[in-house]
Image (cartoon, rainbow, N blue to C red; front, side, top):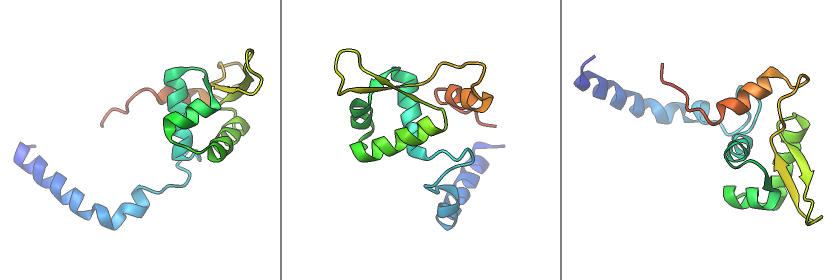
Length: 121
């Protein structure tokens, strides 16, 4: 495919994007039933390791109340764990759990894929 043809195809594809915006960029749960904000939380935890909930919310510009909701959903599904801080009992740290024999392979795969960019096919 020539560069001119590739550019023309790209322009045509971008021109129809507004017609399919709601189908492509839906804000609800994706194929894995995890919200985009939950993926962002997992991505930050994958990069930074253990973080206090307040710091995690600050880095993602998420309110404390919504951060609690996101973390509760991630805990329910087994993606993260709450760990009390040993020095300050008011601080709640959030961490990705270590894979174990009872951890679903889908959870391990999805948290491993967070830091790897998807390759174009």
